[in-house]
Length: 235
Image (tube, rainbow, N blue to C red; front, side):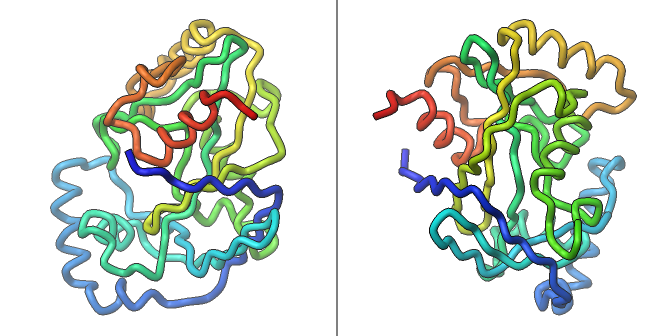
């Protein structure tokens, strides 16, 4: 597998700006037709507003970037069509749950979602609810996504200060380690119990990773690269 550079930062400066995405304007009719097709396949999909990023810059222990608002249909078309506009990226936070016995705890996306079958840490493309004082509150985004997907609240885990940033071009994953004082099996059982209480859970199952042998092709490269680095002996 190719090696992804992991940059560790302690500060995120993610200002939200007023900017009109040319891709979303010039290909509007195609985008709307594409979303209509996807909606027939997965009627639960919602064309809400999301935030995408531009101009990422790493300076010392800080990541700076600008974010703009667009509709989910435009984001979905951009993703499905192979990211034709290389000037923007999907920049999102991820909460990497790790149990007391060292297992990483990931979710399997449900069939009704746009990423059905994929295996991730809790995450989501930021939306308007994640804006605080004119910037993307990535910590709040991770907390919100984790609670929505797994039922775990901030009191259930200990958050490390650093962000592990992996930039692939189309995606910029900002991953934070979250430590839980439960074994992997106990944590999985708790989350599965929480999922059973949800009317339409985003996740269809929970996947534990204790070694490289537990990694699968259903995980995006930035997830496997992060886990591989964490499992490697630290200098």
